Length: 331
Image (cartoon, rainbow, N blue to C red; front, side, top):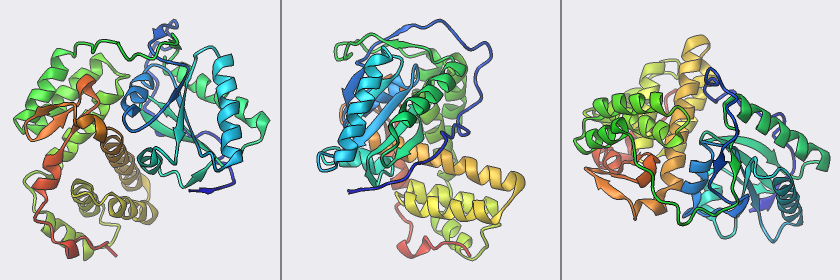
């Protein structure tokens, strides 16, 4: 992984859902360390914390002095801020899969997690004065979303698994029964009770994806999309669903980017939203893959504890008849 310079620029939080009414709740203690090392195995914990307060992931390598310097500076800021955000340290040489999941191609780099959603902060070495300003912006935005928790400094290793809600359990039961429409309805109901639960949001996205691809002819969808322009939004969105389901996420993302470029107005917004949604599905599948091994089976998929979403091997098997040549981009 090479060292890369340049800044992402202003923090773009436009992909986040609207702040809940009546935000600004009193700060509450959140289980977790102020500075933690993040690997694929511990990424689920970072997603948990990000539902209550911001998590800043710093990507570094011992081979890059600039990235080590940014890591050290962010550690100082995290301690000084008294647990208002968690700093997750990602050694890109050891946690390659985490860096890949966040599309980090160079160090130093930093990404915030707010309500489970990634927000790029830095790509390259920022000026020292810029770091505090960006953290201020992240914390101010998080406060608007009612995310005012403060870390208690404990690592949370012995924290018991919380009980899940009735709607959450019903959603998992529906996934087990392959009733993906009902699962989506139950995930929505659970989210109304817990609007900041990132895991439930991922579960909903996965249930909706399964409901869209189950019972379809993936080969026919991809062949049709290859013969139609990117302005045929409905067909191209369906093709992107199939590509993600079959493990061809990069093809899906490239397709949707072309749709965004080729369209305007509501059609462009629909494509943009689908791109964000599918990215989040793929992100969670990649980051939580190690935890699937210790999860419990839910029918044809695997549900990890605490509702981080239902990982769906069934998606690939449902589309296992796709011909490799069928995944041709539209024109």
